[in-house]
Image (cartoon, rainbow over all chains, first blue to last red; front, side, top):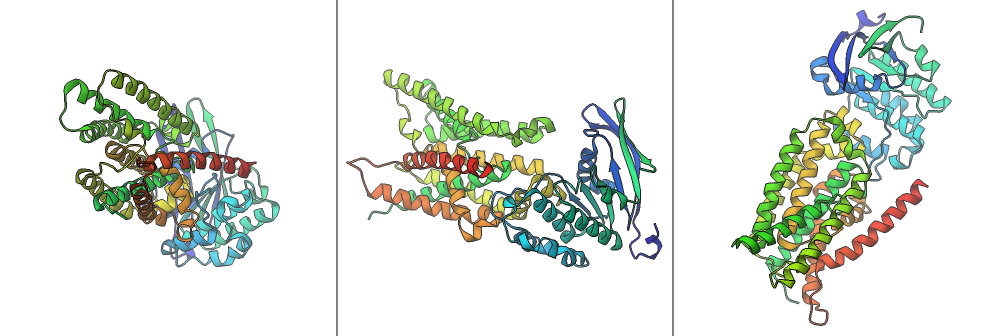
Length: 209
Length: 289
């Protein structure tokens, strides 16, 4: 929270969720605190509902995140029907660009080599970097990354970590689901663990993780 | 060269509609093999034709097969639309992601084709009329009624697509990306599929079956510059080109008679479309391999 008091936009949100039917047969309880300039990590065993939680945020963002712009970088790869490339996507989305977002120009060189290739022809890691760059291009107040290191090699994991630092430095809040990368985990200020207790999925702040 | 303006316009609207419905099917399912022919929509249209002829023969309806079939189809469509738009189960809706739906659609079409053949045999054995010629779509009996129905309805559908055109580019990037952009993906997919079904059923009621046109035309469009990278262009402007293509093909069929018989456009599309389906499946397997 070191940057909070100096910001023009001070985002501090506490989301308290108690959903009677989160997934079929399951309910959800928990509190999450999101602060601008910080990254929080959400972890938990496979199948506990981490991606479903992000999906819930996506579908109910108007009621949960009033007046905030959310940006999601999901797991599934971009697989368009046609031969659209990252450059074409950027061109088509230009009207939705966040004009205050300078990070895109800073990180575009990472993907420049394959930005003109059709998205469906890219490797998993290249596709993942394109997704991340599209999210940065569009801008937002809170970024949600669902396993961002999947398919990324060590170089691109470091590149993503630099993106993450850049987003934090630009006062964005980041919520990350991550299993693999210790480097990405180490950049998160808070950590929340999800676990099942009976038919309830609980999320609690964990320490020393 | 003879030109029948109403016939040309009917052919244009058929090509327009089938191109649009094919693009909507492929975009909605994110599968380049999806089309009204492979998703079973043709089968539903043929089923309505069969029912219409049965009603006319059994109960003496005087509407004519086109309007009877259209009426039956519209009734069935309304029920399906009500059920689909009200359906809330996410698990049930996930069928859209399954490749098997294409196999089911093809199987359903084959089943309707078999029923069509059986009934054709029975009707003709009993000396009743049967719309045999509609199995391969043609424009020999194109009239103003069909032109007005298709022209008006497809115009409204195109206007809907124009108003929601930006969403097509988002959906093209994936349902998750589109959701993140604020698109109500489930509702948008359902509406797109219903529109594709409506277009197909209306065309089949008036002019018969044009197998695989909805599959082939979007693929042809995507090999050209402005459609290659912009799904919005494909949805909005591709149908105009598809319509022009079919109008020209039918003009050729109308003016160049083969030993006294006019070749139906639907017959041409069946052969070319089936071959294209085989080549596309082969190409997709090579790319994946």
